Amino acid sequence: MHDLSFSFHIMPFLLNRHDLYNEHSRSRTNNNLILIHHQFIPITKLDLFLFSLGLILNCFSYYSLTPALMVIIFYFFGYFLLNIPFISGYPEKQLFTRVYIILFLVSGVAAIYANQFNDVNQTLKDAGNFFYFSTVDISSLSLPEIYLITDGSLMVKIWGFIYNFFEYFGFSKEPYIGILFNILLNCFSGVVGIKIIRLLFGFDLYRFKKFTLFYSCTGIIWLISSTHLRDSLSFFLCNILLLSWVHCLTFFRFDFRLFFLLAVNLSALYLFPYIREEFLSVPLGFTFCAFASVLLSINSKSSDRSLRLIFLVFGLILSIVVFFVYFSSIIYTFNYVQGTYLGVALDSSSDNSLGMSLIVSQPLFIRIFLGSIYLILSPIPFWPGFQFELIMPLFKSFNAL
Image (cartoon, rainbow, N blue to C red; front, side):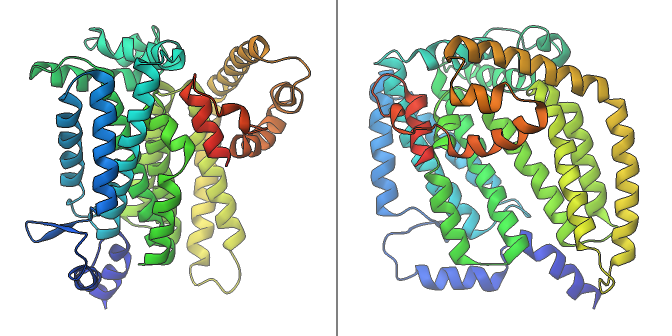
């Protein structure tokens, strides 16, 4: 009985032998798949065509064959990680491969904009600054020291290590290295999404395929993957945070899941300010949503009602303590970010614009509610992004569609 219970809790993270056998049986007659070491790497003829197109665009844009070598190195490194227990699974590998190829193709389009069309959003501004600080020699500085120089000190530290690592082997510090790492992180964010689907719905091939399709065609994912922005790591860590909560709430027990949840959330409280200052509120937001979920799920017929009540009381006490400890930092961060963003918005928008009047100029709680909706639907209207000067507005318009 104990073994059965253990298998039930652990199986959503693993592809069991029955699932692997079914996938193997269905794929044996499919000539589009490639066999490597008796395991299927799920690459179709369409994937090969898109990958070849991405190679042409990237190599042409950078006038070098090095992107072709780097994209293979990053792919097989990611594929190696997908064979680690608790990460491995055929749907995970399928999503990883498809998303990796599409994002590499999109990065080729973005590279044309940056190198041939001189896209200032990529060569200057946030993306250009991030590339500059990632490639200058500040790796010896600590996170607090880098924090005083530029925003996103954790990303600067990580990307700087990657650039220095490849420079040690003779590669020059070119943007495609950091962009390929962006692509790798967003592929693993998709893998985390597959894990969440497993937890909520079990082994559901229909949902896996639909999620892979929608995720690979999302304009915002294209944007943060194909340019040298620093948002891929924050997106990945937020997905890990979400996975830890879903895992804990789906299989509600006082065991290692609870300790893993606490470790992830406390680590996030420490690391997120080094990603973006306003991200300090993200773990607290997840905690609030989780407690609301627990509260709504408690009823007299729940078999684990007492456990949920204990978790709720303990969590509320801990959250109150953490909130008061970080209260001044949270208020300062919100005020600082709001002031900075308001200044940028005033420079780029008119005072009577829809975004200024309904969102930016409103109090905090109204901004959170309306801003979240606007973020999903933006830009409004969507068609101004369809132009041939800047890639970021183009991807945002695709995302709105």
